[in-house]
Length: 205
Image (tube, rainbow, N blue to C red; front, side, top):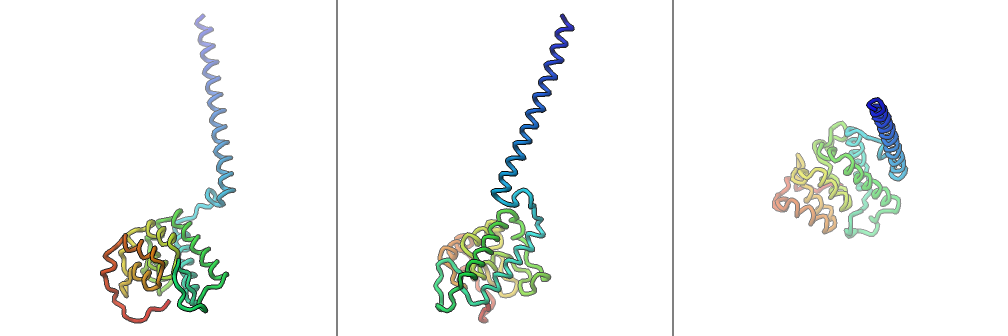
């Protein structure tokens, strides 16, 4: 009888191990299937794991292109009034500006740390030491983009330009950004309204 019990116990253990292995394989197969489905819906979410260095470079490439769009004399601000009808952006330029803003939103969600690293002179001598939040305000990014950049690195709202002392709130006012953006920046750093910038010269785009 003891031999029979041991045999039955051995068979039960083997069956339990087999069932557990089948369940494990099924779970892994389901995870792989789910991952493949998500990858089709959101391209690159699993397969494209961009490094922080590459993401940081992409962020500054976007900002440099935003600068070029701003130099064209266009105004893309949420609800801002155009100073001149002739300055209204073309559909192509406005679309490109929107696409760049969407890319910044993606980086803020996937690589928030890159917003805390200032611009390198290798990227742009003119933007050396500056942070993304101030430049996004300077180049008229949308409310969602400015808010995302702030939440990615909140301390940037209180860090002035290394030369002229301009803060993100200053740029929002200079560029006549929407009242929602100005209100957002002021509520998060009210002291900025009491800080004078050190430059009285006319500001270039």
